[in-house]
Length: 196
Image 1 (cartoon, rainbow, N blue to C red):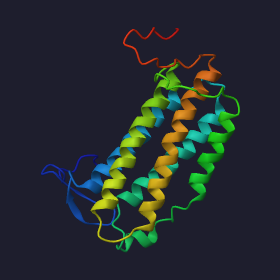
Image 2: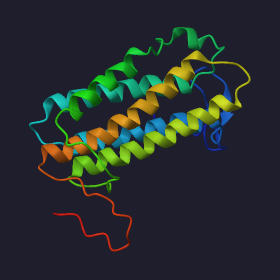
Image 3: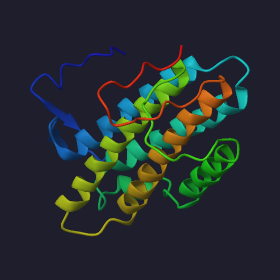
Image 4: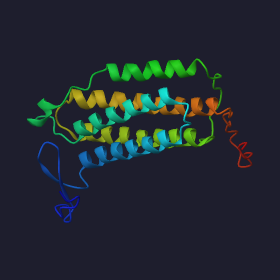
């Protein structure tokens, strides 16, 4: 099977639920952002130290969940395909909250904004946070453009909101594991360079 088909050469694509839509369609933009986020997670996993097997496993679960998020975003709610997808339930957001709480127990309280960066894994976690926020905004726009309520989309928005919080704490946690301090933003243009 060839990877290229030529079907998208005219700027059209097919949703998981079978509808032909322009590649600029809001639904395509939304699952495209989630796909980008999943790729960033791949880079984050690659940047983790070899001794972080538990964290790698946790991030692989997040990647699998993001495939489910993308599948829901690529499916119109009233389609027959929607009934074949596994429901996206609140327990996934609750698991993120538990992971956030677990990591925060090892972190110093935060009293200021911090500059994104630090070790490579932390830097990738910050990139993941920002891409996740964009995916969340796109999902909200998708909800706003819909004439009917979509419980699954609501659950996805909650999940993406919680996931971006998770990535923020994960960035701090990765720096903590690497022995790197967060660099506080002081609001001045003469901000000192972060320690190396």
